[in-house]
Image (cartoon, rainbow, N blue to C red; front, side):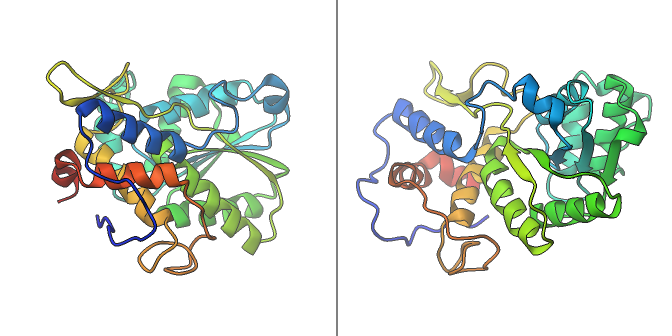
Length: 282
């Protein structure tokens, strides 16, 4: 996972002077990536009652699956779109499911390692939350976030489902990029639904008594290893930065131009220069 350190115009990016500073920088980046339209309070009942679709894009964070299913219970008109084939997170999702409250479904053979991400999701949605198959669409071909969006939109259009309002749920670290990708792909297929971004939690770390980084609360369960977390965190900034190696118009042209706040860029440089990040991305 490349981290691009050749940017210009960013000031004051000396290495953090303390583990506490490093944690603050990481949390600033994570808070920006975890785009949420509800200020952490979740969608209100009036919105949920009129939602046409809740879309869960493939990732390894179990809390996103739980949140999507719980919101479906409160959204009587919504279709649950489960997206994810085989990709970088598939094995990690399976392992997290095995070690979660949904582990019995794996031990019973209902969730299998060979399944696509969306198929694993569907088992949990049906067996743990009672969501009927008729209220779900399963997109099991995608191998990356762009395909998640493209194939999900195709599936919704092929099913002739009403699509005036959509709620998107993704790994908090990939939430902002997923929203940008959805907007780009929706424009290509003339889909003009109102789209809401819901990050189910804000990633948060702290410096422990031993000065090592650790996740706060229960975020260590069913999420990431610290090494993968840091690699994803830094990789997302690299992808969103509009430069030759990024996903914007100056690079791969997969996303529109993104203005990353200067404070977030400064935090990125400090984190990327830290020994902890060097271990994560080597």
